[in-house]
Length: 354
Image (tube, rainbow, N blue to C red; front, side, top):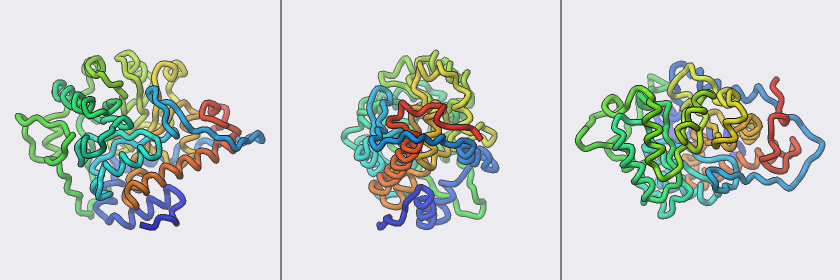
């Protein structure tokens, strides 16, 4: 598909929505409640401006180390569900785009493909897992991810009652999800379920237990990243239980409509946190200048969710690579404006709050 006219993430969004139709658009756009948290994630970036510098450079380095590995730019692909709804090759396209671009991709538990179907080499992938009542079930799927070659585990800790599946438009026919045909979706044959809501009721713990997280961290041979941290106290707990990274996240505004915007959540972290653990951010990132501002406020890198789906929907692997390239090109322009030759030079002094 010709995507030459698509020059921004906003262009990709508009084109994808036009292509996907009402039901899939509704699924992507859905939010918790009235959409307050989702909107806050987007709007908060306008509270900050980049401070220009007369000292500019054409030699711009966007590489960064995450969990000890160098990636080409501080933008990674967040876990999102059912990629075959957006591209025929599903998660294989997502993985190929990440590998080609030189970044990492988090495989969702709701993947439409098994690990070996996604790629024979998964060293550039992490595996996302929800919290469960049955700790042994979690360990079983951690083992599977490890044996398949994934390089990290992302525990989503802000969805202990299950992921919200509300619709954004009550007049649109909902998407039918293949909940019994998902190969890396934790299931127990002795605990059958009928619908996704039934699954959540039977499998989810309903409350967060830090002792369970500590047990999982101790068990896993892979580094554990906790997704869903929004305050300094929880970041400290993540360090205490041995996590190697945290993602400042409110689940894309799809889980709790009163949650703080993720960029604001990032600002609550004290400097000592970032010295002890990798800090990432997702939610509301729609441009390279957003990435610049997140790094200036203390993030090591960001994850993109919806924008990745827009790229996949428009042109599969190549569409996603283009979206990643747009983010990186815009980030470089922000770096050039601020006189930053590399990511280490981006700090709080490079932005100002309005």
